[in-house]
Image (cartoon, rainbow, N blue to C red; front, side, top):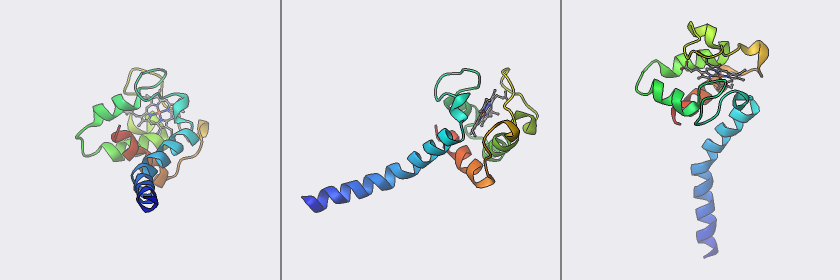
Length: 108
Ligand code: HEC
């Protein structure tokens, strides 16, 4: 019984782990100061961004660029909202972190 519950915990950590890590990254980079998950506010909601980019092969690359350079980096703003600022006004996001965030957003 003890072995079984340890195994279950190990499996749960494997499944939940990466998602949790990305959530932490979104929090630490202060994305949620402007973006909510499901409802538009100052910025489009992550679920709506995911829906808009669904099935577009260029999605991840464009989103990485927006995350690193703000919406001006991709010819935006595209959502009839404010501009997403570049990194001068936000915590720095590396290329690798931006890739991780883009993949996470597209999975919402
Ligand atoms: C100061 C507010 C603010 C912060 C902080 C912010 N964003 Fe944004 N973001 C916006 C706004 C406003 C837009 C809409 C810009 C537009 O219309 O192109 C946007 C757009 C985006 C888009 C592009 C959607 C598209 O379809 O082109 C992505 C992806 C995104 N944000 C991700 C992030 C991530 C990830 C973070 C954290 C690293 C973050 N944002 C932090 C305000 C913000």
